[in-house]
Length: 123
Length: 106
Image (cartoon, rainbow over the protein chains, first blue to last red):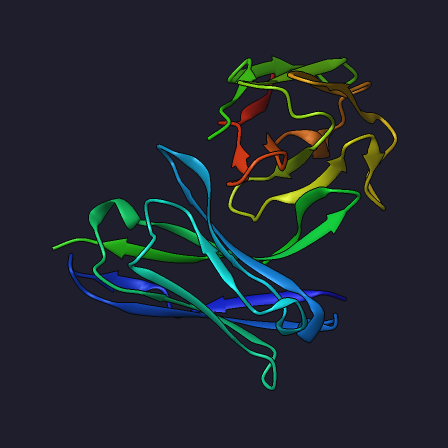
């Protein structure tokens, strides 16, 4: 059974930093492309970024609102995905989900999701 | 970015009703569309990719469409189907989601 378990959320002041973790199990993590997706009541679901598998270069891509402030990384030896968030803004307040990004015939979709972890950015 | 617009924002229906949710893309996306179901307080769950129902999803769910207009239909609404449904396109980077359609009990 695929499991994705996020941790690390909490309350942070504007301008602060936080790192989220996602422990993965039940699939071959080293081969997986992974994404972070966030959800707010106002803006709904928003893709944050992705990291490819190392065999595909291990490169990352980010949504415009977080580019330059967020960094996605992975430790394949620990089956763990990370999201380092710096220079946080109040608009980053959201539930953050770790997802397994799958692809089939040119269609990319988020096949499995963690339970989510809440980040609140407030003074 | 491609904008995904869902309608209606919410629908009130009874058990056994047929429910149709529409998703419209701001430009053509072929069949690069997925649907997710999200129950209150839970993470979204993938239910449909292009014309393929995901494993374990009841056959009362069906999806159709291509280009810019798509529909998700629940042929006979069941108690466990009350949830919010989201569409998501993968034709163009970044992948974007619709704002959701909440299916509520009448």
